Amino acid sequence: MRLRGQSLTTLLVGFIALSYLVQLLLPGYEEALWISGFDFQQGEYWRLLTVALVHGGFFHLGFNLYAFHILGTPVELYFGRNKYIIVLLTSLIFGSLASALFNDPFTASVGASGIVFGLFGSLALVGERVGIEWRGIIGIVLINFALGFVLGGIDWRAHVGGLLGGTLITLALNRSK
Image (tube, rainbow, N blue to C red; front, side):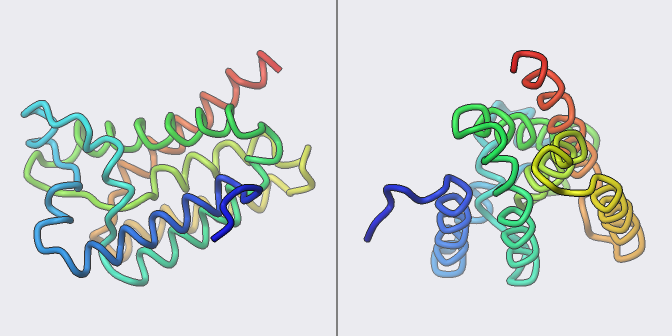
């Protein structure tokens, strides 16, 4: 198995997919990694990161991993691996904090959509530099927000938090570039 030379995006997509298989096979795995306001208030801060490793079903996983790969690849190419890690972590933490702080404390959230929406925010700012039309990105974000309200059961707070985190860290990293 050759990992050297693989993009971080590809490695993380594979790792999250593998984690989903563990979730299917190991009872209690999802509950140990999801995030809720209650868990966060109990000092279980690792959940800010582990929430991205568990998903609410195959379609949830598939959408997030597809979007992660499509959006993450150009952001990784633009920033390079080290700054890209900062974008991913900031997006994930902002999304997780928004979920933990603004949802009902006993509502559990799962998924990597904080990262995905952070990548939307990042690409809206740097997309043209890598050949991606930013207006299309904004349209996709709006459609995803609308779906969250229409379908229900989607943690739109994590989406807003991730979008905010990805946008803010991209602004900061671009200033230092």
